[in-house]
Length: 179
Image (cartoon, rainbow, N blue to C red; front, top):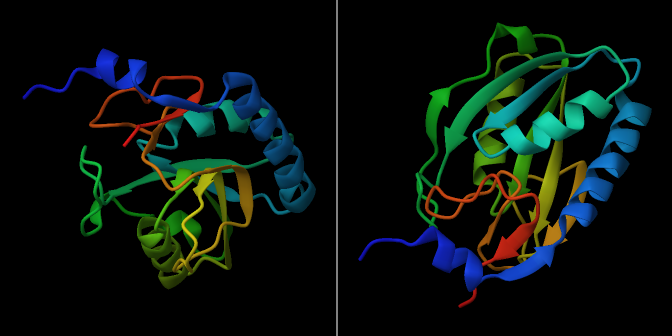
């Protein structure tokens, strides 16, 4: 059976409007500026989900920073996570640095925990995490976000960089599949 992305969107529930997402990103920019303005951090975006979030957040940060990316995933265009698959690992530019990881969602936390651990293993002085969304799971996660834009329910969400079967990362609002 072929997946019809238009039908998925038409039957989904709106969780956060584009205006709510924009307001959350503005708030995060202020919080990050307050904490990082004098640290000249290395900001690492987790591809591909964080590309939309990073692209909207970075121009709002009013301090010097360097930018890079990693690519690690557990989902592989599916709705259930598996083992972490590395495509691009952190580089030597993390050594002795304050690193800020940007990601679209803190779900179970395994991917972000692995990325944070890898940065620390490579010699990062400090690793902070900022996520556009955090899923409310009701149990402990292996890593905590230092900065959270919005919370989402324990449902499969998409939009704003988050995909569903590879589709709809480009939506400006956040939706959830209906059970």
